[in-house]
Structures are given as structure tokens and as C-alpha cells.
Image 1 (cartoon, chains in turn purple, cyan):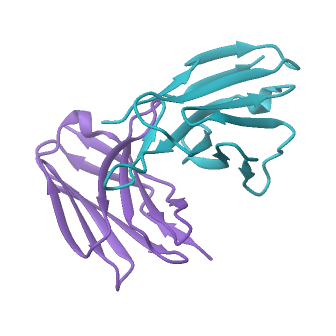
Image 2: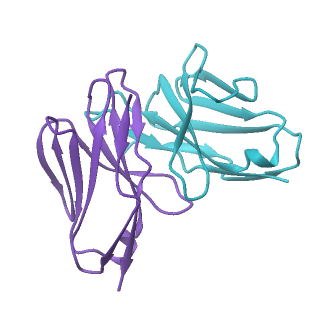
Length: 109
Length: 117
């Protein structure tokens, strides 16, 4: 079956770095997305990886290893506003998105 | 970037009434839109895939007669919750893919919070 796994909750300190991991098993693969969702709001796009390697975008970076079925989202210089849920989603061979349950990131001062 | 607009943002209704939620892609055409439901502190749950000009594809366990989806144009999909009950109270979110964009990125509407009394 298709499955996306990511930690339920993580805690980090303001100014620090945190890495949120995501492992996946899907029928085919057409890319992996990371979305940020603040409580009560719709998700917003963070990154898309379809080739192996690291994509850097400001304070956020996303890494993909297709052979390992693994991705991570790296957040640097954490700010309080980064407190949110981070959703990992894979696009399968039918271009359907398979969603992880999300990782709730709590930032402490 | 592309914009998806969802309306209404908030709706409160009495049990037994029907509620329509609109999802519009404002600056791109979307042959496919997706409808999600999200209960508090839970992840997005895909309800159905809305296809322009054809019937929607519903996920297992989602009642097609209760959640009516109409995708009459390339920029508009509607979700109607028929005979709503308190257990239908949830955050409903639509998304659309800009197939013209390099990443095929999904853009989300603002979400509609439904409260059924």
C-alpha cells in the first residue's frame, strides 16, 4: 500500500536548526512536496523535489533520496512564526498526492 | 503565484440544511481540483477529485450523495454538503494544480470552516 511517515511532533528552540524527516512508499513517484500549515489556515507550498539532492530556499531546504524513499525539510534560524504543522506529500504515478499526517513543530524561546 | 479563492470562509447552519462552498482558480485554469476535509489537530483528508466536465472521483468512505461536487468550468468547482449534520462540522479546503507551472504545484484555497448546529 501507499504510506507516508513523518514524526507527529517536534520541539525546537528559537534560532536553532530543525530537521523534519519523511519516508514514503508509493505506487510510482512524481515528486515530493512540503507544505506549511498554521492552525486554522490552509497549507502553503514550501518546496518540491523530484530529483535527488538538496534544494535550498532561504531558511528552508528540502532533501530527497529516491532510492531510500526519504526526504527531509531543514529549517534554519528558527523563528517563533515557524511554529506550524509541516506536511509531507508524495505524488504517485497517477499524479495523486498522498499526504503524511503532518509534523507539529513547536518553537520555544 | 497562482491564486485559489474559496468562499465562504465561515459558515454556520442548522442541521438538515445544505451548504455550498465555491473554489475558484483566479489566474489559471484547473481541469482538476481537489476537495479535502480536516478535523481539528488532524491531517488533510482527501474527499474527492473534481474533474471539469465529468463526474468527481470520490475517496473510499465519502458519500457522493451527501457531498455533491460540480466542476462546471475550468476555474470553478463547488462542494455542496447536503442535509448537513453536526458531525459534518469541519474545515473544508480545496486545491487546484496549475498544470502550466513547472512544478505542477498545488495551490490551496483559504479553507471554509463549517459549523452545523
